[in-house]
Image 1 (tube, rainbow, N blue to C red):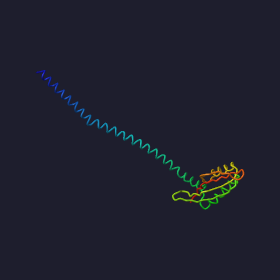
Image 2: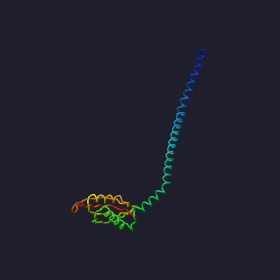
Image 3: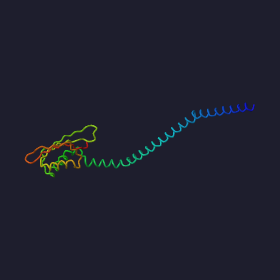
Image 4: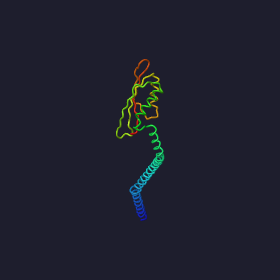
Length: 182
């Protein structure tokens, strides 16, 4: 009887042990593992939120720096426009004076100067198209073109072409745009 009783007790403990292992495995796969996955997902979301927060703080700092510099930039832009972009009332005389001054300074002869005013809606500046024809030695024509490009006024040279002139001279036909405030 002792042997049978021992077998029953051992079978009981084996069954109990297997039941505990089965319950443990069931709890692991049904509770612990999903909770661990949720915790890892929450940790990852927290890290991403922290990273986004740091990026947003950096953006805010950059924008605050930009906003602090904005009034000075606005003043500089107004000064630039006042100094380099003439108003419509005096643009024609300023352009004629500029071309005349540069022709005398560089030693070329002005043959033709024509203007074409154009303004488009939505554009911040109006444009005064310039078509200048000058005659002189090649080096002087290059100096004239360079002086026109590097003047303080907001002029954009769009095209220029050379052609043979009379004697040892060359003709320069230069097209450009002078920007002006409307």
